[in-house]
Every structure is written in structure tokens, then in C-alpha cells.
Length: 491
Length: 96
Image (cartoon, rainbow over all chains, first blue to last red; front, side, top):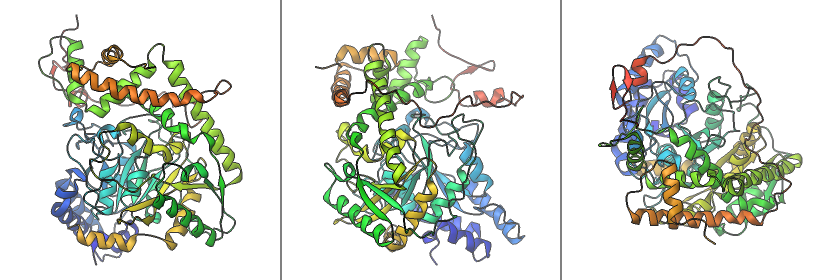
């Protein structure tokens, strides 16, 4: 038995039946991480001492038959923009290089109460701004499928770690595709839940009206299980929605006969690689063979979402990142003589260039004379997209399309042209602008052996339908064996 | 038509309290931001005159909680990440 191959559910069962001890699981995974993550670069910090201590305590509880918690003894990796009390939370930025939060994010409270074990904090694009994890202040991440390829981003460390068999699940955050696109590039499953489903308390804010935390796993069932555990209203996030159905495993195996699926023609048009388009068309055939109908529809304003998104997200970022003043926490520049000089030097030295670019863009968009022209018009476009997608959901259960226009590209290939990278987000942005849930699941491999992701978008709070369709699809196509093969090579 | 020039970037950087180290860096930002803002002008071709802006994805109104006492962070915790403190307070350079 290879511990690193086991899913969340399989590990849980083997621990419950006392076949393996939590400390054996944790030990085996740390061995793996230490053997090869120097190459992959998925972790920024390993929580080894605490994790081993916790695992030993759980060993004792296992012996005593007191195995409480739905994730008893399950290791996890957490994106480094989610606050972990007393444990480094850097956002992969020099600005927070030594920052230790004084509280846990809501999701961490929930996972800790489930008796999951934190293995470490995962690499990302600085402050979650980027699509390749090349904007990390500390180091790049390599894609376990092909070490020359990027893992995607911004949750690149989280997706790479799950693919490499370092942890059975990770949490990422998704503002414009940052969970789904790395999941697609790394051949794993990633969910951005409905906005408000998961509390953002303790997630370092990037664009507050778009950010959501979501799980990254190797299969659909694990993903549904983890989302169920981190969902729920929390009084410290005023945008978290009242509690509602959150058992996403229920009905996951339902027959798809009669399900109506829409495929927007804009999602497979210009700018989408042939391989990706073929993969989506094949997926449509798979859904038809499962009894669903798949019809072509249109979201006419799709081509404008990238413009609207970067105006809105950068505006919100410029406001959110104003908090980094070098006084209460974070990097502090030396030698400033006045407070204003202190701010300017601290922020110049503490932020990387992509973060600065977005702060400058957002500040420009919100400044006098440009607010109506850019910001308000972008928010209007957002309303148009929502209306167009809502109309589709009046008739259809789900929308499908690719997660990203291409499979993973090479490290360094796009890092000099921000605009080109921004344009790649066109397929994932609609779900963030509208707040709708969307999942990426593997749907193929490119000729060069890099994974391709299929995206399933649902109406608000329709995660159950997404998981149902994804699970049935996964029974027909998955990369589980390929992942195991890959994990043999990553050692 | 270019909205972004060197002066705009310097002005915006000042508003955002980010020092731009040298002329070369300012020029690079100018070029990059100009490209991005230029691309954003794609939106100009859409007629949005009768559309209302959508600021938020989920329609929640008046989210309130019970107004009861809760324990705040201790002074020690609140100061634990600060680089410069004195007498239990954050210390900053002179303001005026």
C-alpha cells in the first residue's frame, strides 16, 4: 500500500479500521515531501514538529477508540494566504515574510476541529496575483507532470502538492480562477464554491467581492466531502450566507438522464487551443452517453469579462492592500525619517512588481476622473454577464467549457507579458464576477502529456449538481492511474 | 489615445504610497499599465447606458449580530507582529 496514493476517504477508512496510524501517514508524507519538494517547490513552510506531535496524540486516541472528527488523522496543505494561528502566513510576499497570525481563519478552525493535520503552508503567486505561481517572492513551483511546466496559479503550490502525492487535499483561494486553473494544469480537482458559501474570515483579502476559498483534491468525492466541512455561515464574515444544504456527497451518484447541459460557443472559440477544444467536445459526448443533453448556447459578452475583471479586482486590491503599512505587522523599511517616507519605502520594498502593478492600476481606476469611466462601467458589465448566465440557467442545469485556453505552458514562457496572461483567465472569470460555483476536473491529456481541465459551472448554490455531474464524468474519464504513475516518478 | 503617462504613474504611486525607485521603473510601469488600460477600453464598445452596476455577487442586506461583549485581542497579541513598539504601543516615525 502506498500511503501517498490514498484519497481522503480511503485514508479515513484505514485509520478508522486501525490498519494504519495517523503518525505513519504523516511520517510517510513528510518523507516524500522532503525527498522531492526541493525540486517541486510546493511548500513554503513545513509544520513538521507540530504535525508529528498532533499525529502521536491522535495515535493514542485511535488506540483508545476515540476517533472523533470527520477528518481524523488526515494530512492537509493550506495555501499561504489563509491565516493559521502562530504559524507563518506569508502570502508568498516579502511584506509578510515573518508574519504569524494571532487567530485562525474560519476554515482552519473547522478543519482543526475535524482533526485534520496541517502539514505546511503552500506556495502561491504573491497575494494570489498571478496564474503561474511565478510571482512568488520565495521560489517557483514546478508542475509534477512536467518539471518544465508551470503548475498554474495562483494556488500553484496547493495543486502541485496534491498531484505529487504530498497531501490528499489542499485548500486554495480563487479570485479569478486561482483554484480551478492550477487544478486543471496539475490534473486534479478544484472547486470555487458559490460566493458566500465559505467564510472568508482569515483569508488575506485580495478582491473581497470575488475571493472564495475552495478545496483541491485528487477525486470528486473527496472534494465534495471537504467543501461540506468548510462551508457555513460565520459571523465574522458579513458576506457569508445563512447556513443551507451542505451535504454534497448526497446524490453524487445520481443518474444524469434528463440533465440539461449548456456549452457556450464563446468558450470553445477563438483563442482556445485545438487540443482543449477537442477535449471539451469529447466531454460533451461523454455527458450525452450518460443520458444528459448538451446544447450550444451563447454568452455574448464573454469577450469583455477580462477587462471588467482586471478593473474590478485591481480596484479592490488597491483598497485591501492599503493595510500593509509596516507598522502593525509585516515588513518595515529602515531609515525613514517621516511617516510618509516610511509608508512609501516599506511598500516599495515589501511588494513585488505584479502586486505594485495591480495596486497602481486599481488606484488609477478609482481616482477622480476615471471612476465612472472604468470602475462603474466594469461593474455594469458584470451585471450583464450575470443576466446572460442566469438566462441560461433558466433552461439548463449546468454550463460546461474548458478551464483554461491551453494546457500548462513552460516556466518563463509568459511571465514577461502580463496582459497575455490576464487574457488566459477569460474562462474562469465569469464564475467569480457572478459569484457562481465552478469546478475543474481532468478531461484529457495533451499530446505532450500535460493535463487538460474541464470546467463545470452551476447556478448559485448548485454545487450538488456540479458534483453529481463531475462524479459521473469521472467514472468515465479520470487521470487516477496516471497520477499514481507520476507519483512513482516524483520521489 | 493614451491615458497613462509618466506623470499619471507618479501621481497614482504617490496616492498608493509606493515609492518608485527610479525613472526606469516608472517608465516600465507606464508602458505596462498603458497596455492594460488600453485593453480595458474594449468595454467602450458596449452600450451600458441602461444597465445598473453589480457591486456584489450575493444579495445580502443588513447583516447584523447581537451587540454583546466579546473578548478583544490582548495588547500582547496585538503588538506581537509589530517591528517597533514602545510602552505597549505601536511606534511610528514622526508625522509632521
